Image 1 (cartoon, helix red, strand yellow):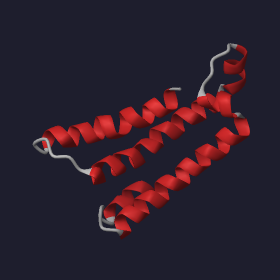
Image 2 (cartoon, one colour):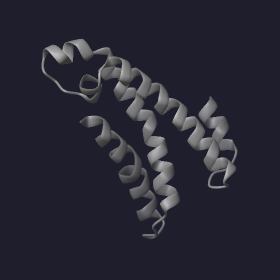
Image 3 (cartoon, rainbow, N blue to C red):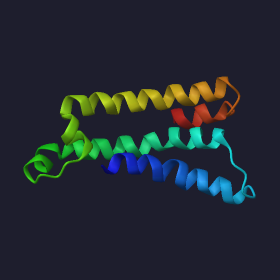
Image 4 (tube, rainbow, N blue to C red):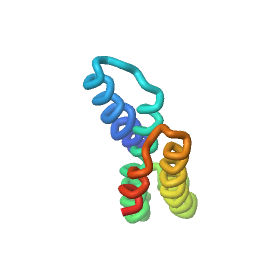
Length: 108
């Protein structure tokens, strides 16, 4: 179950932890949500890699999340992650949690 670990490590632990330490140990739920949203990107890459090797992993009895949920569901989950990330960043800009240039960075 490496995919949930990627979300945790690349999101709240790495980005949220860096914010926490560099801000003088201030907690921010906004940073937690932003970092979790960011972590969807690396997680979708891992999903793609695991989907690509799904048949070999199944034969080797390596139970990645795409193996467990099946190829079709894994592909739709990857698409949903991509869409969720764009919608999430747009929502954070609309609500004022992030500024509009983040959308330009995300679209490039």
